[in-house]
Length: 258
Image (cartoon, rainbow, N blue to C red):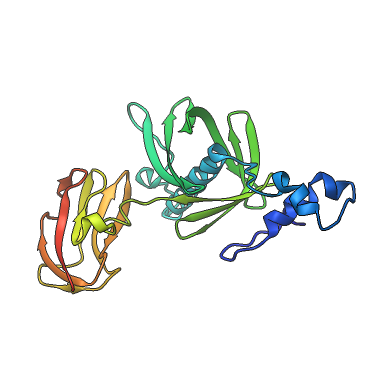
């Protein structure tokens, strides 16, 4: 029952209770007030899933959501090849990077798709990755020799992954979505990676509020909205829609309100 309890958005002790019920003291009915210190190694700081499987779950869930969205664009029985997210390329492999945060540490996962299949490189390992959606809606994940059935729920940037082995959280770091938010950038809004400017939602002289959409960039075949890091006034647009920009290029200048 505990393994089938999935709660997102609230701090719970479900994982702790799962660890208690699998401890040696619980199995032997050695239940007293010393159980927690006696079983501390089994009750705390356990990571039964690990970074590679957690990353695989997040990547597979992201790709499956994109594929499902592409399938929804089909009309009159025709499948638009440009709406598919299956990694197909006319020449060479498809390589896509994912910025992650796991257990408070930043990591990068690289997904490579070729005709022979898909691999995921993370934590110094490169392993074959496969997945399918089960009848219950869970993802049946196969990463190398490891196979898990994972229920995955996204709450903003955080993916909550529930498996029979345990539950973990992993964060998808969208650098474009948080462009300009660091102290070093101040009123600057820069491109964290190479891409194309799709559109601007403001013009020079416009007053904007924190969180307001300023521009849309396309990178890695995805569109990302860049928001104002603070209240202020748009001083200047430095590019035009359709322009290609390099990593670190300043897209527009914002005079931040005092």
